[in-house]
Length: 232
Image (cartoon, rainbow, N blue to C red; front, side, top):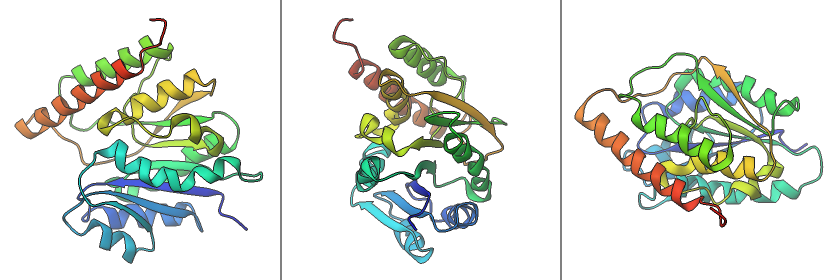
């Protein structure tokens, strides 16, 4: 019997937290096909993924989150046309560690028919800056497709396999999630957000954190411009 869940784990230099993430996913989704989209890591992320039985889809250079995830998602595109019942596709970040087991609730939201694309909202916020990038992301999604997003840039997403062709290739780098939401809504799919007790490596109000959010914001602006309607 084919697995009822396929998982894409995006990772860049996550060798320290990835083992716990993969263990939690394996426990939550027994028999699932798990692919690790390794975005040119230099710390042994690929070796860790292979040691835990994951299928590694590796970019030899850093191409950004959207590019690495696209390489993995392309392997799953045939599932969009597979016989029913098709598996649910789960995307998540490699730094969730043990909290990844909560993603079962997200997958259930799609499998039960409550949404075509379910997005996890973190129950507790850790780290972050002043909210400028997040605020722009919400505005960009609302402006481009009318959807009011609470967690516009959450990388923890479950979707029906039929939705894959509408959102792949993903938008480049950190624009991936904004582009996915806009594309899904425009294609007529139902999007919902689910609050979950997740935890990840967060960036705070440090120079490194502000530089990270600056790169995010640049990618958000780029995907906003790319998703401009022909008649706007």
